[in-house]
Image (cartoon, rainbow, N blue to C red; front, side, top):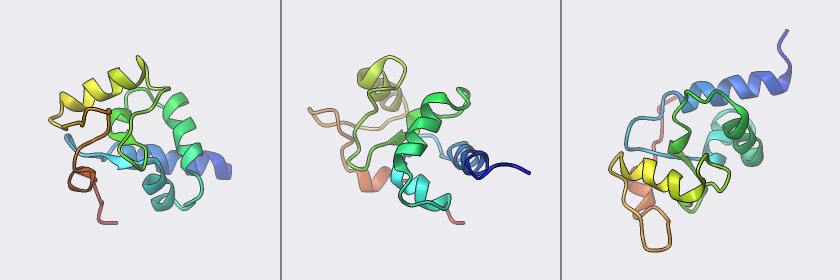
Length: 106
């Protein structure tokens, strides 16, 4: 039987795999949808150490900020999202975050 941590990680990775091109989700949003609303930092750890083939660039903080632990740092994170058509303000935060947040129908 899978451990609780493994099951949570599997749910996180399955959800991240579904985030559409040009859309994002927050760490907290993913944590809540996967069954533990208080586990945003755990989601960040899964992003850092999880399956590198998933679209982790589509996961951002609650303010639309980039992850410092992203390969290449915040600037690389931003560049990958800009390649998907997402716009940023001068401080490196997603402009109009609410319009690019993906809200899956579960």
